View 1 (cartoon, one colour):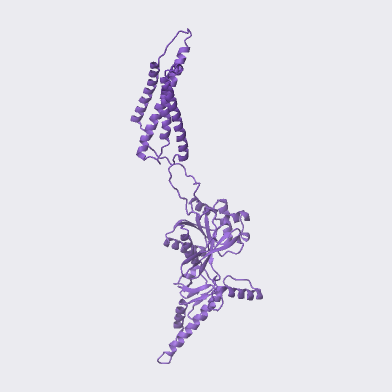
View 2 (cartoon, one colour):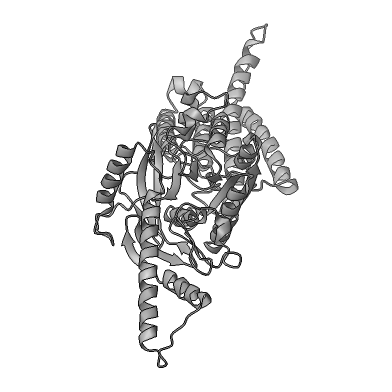
Length: 491
């Protein structure tokens, strides 16, 4: 619609290029521009505490302009752009780069023809489900995936990859049941529009509400300008009132900027010629788009409908892979069970030791070398004791104490094993030495000799342990293992 002084009002031009006030100072539109969704997207990201995103943009000026404006909005909101990818025809390479850069929240700007290719790539790369969230334009035609599918993916695969995506677009008609400037609610207007359209056999347009409100903008503007001109004429002291087109154009421009009324598309206001409209959020759920919320640009408020958004996991996806360094430690229940068994073993060994000492003068016990038996039991108890020490890790003791603990438990285990095994070996050797005498002469090997054998073994162990401790003492080292997915965390 053209006015004096080349002023223009559009109800369907959404391209961001027209937002340049230096080039188009007299351009207004009742429909929000494509850039209008960006503050809504940022608000949505902040709602779920997503501070790291990636963008995937079709290499067309319309989408590039939106991406550039989105980049500015994200930077102002202190949201990190982990990767920015653009493509012309085949998006798979770029989708793969997003995955390699661990981008989980992906904001896409592309038409429905390439959207099918994008989601086919996402399916093949397993970039869907509980770990990922796709945010794409919401102005695609209904069932676009059926008509635009020129990929090698089946419709079932596309629907699997698409499940849960969020789409963002302007709201064509207000959902509020409020009578606006026309005396009708948006719902009453829509019924009347559909009735008239069906009578004439005309296809529906998503811009009809903006065209209707545009007529009201023009009517109110002209009415207000005429009032101002009449008022100026009445107060002109010379009663020779004249006004040129330039002055009228400036008045029209000022009045248009002051527009504020409730229309069928919501509150109609302009900011630098741009419509401050309502942005709707829909989510693809089981083959259809469901409205899940809306963003009011005037109030800068995001209103999500309770319990309508369905994420693939039990919670919203994370915006990155969180790597948490976690010290591996002994399983406490397992340690408790083994410690209990160890205590029982030590009690049993203690009972055997008591029995052996008490009955040491019994003929059968005396024949089995009770002192050697006592050494076997004591060596076993020392070995049992080392189990307690080996179960103590960094979660129970400090780093410095852990190094001392490593040395102590090594000494106890070696001394305990050598004592028990040495005594058993000495007894076995004595039996061997006695019965290998083919002449069957009586041969007596006393316990003192067996003690010397066990002592010699212990002396060898002690020499090795002391040299080890002096030359290369045990030290605590930290070893990093490969990354593992947590069983309780959702990425």
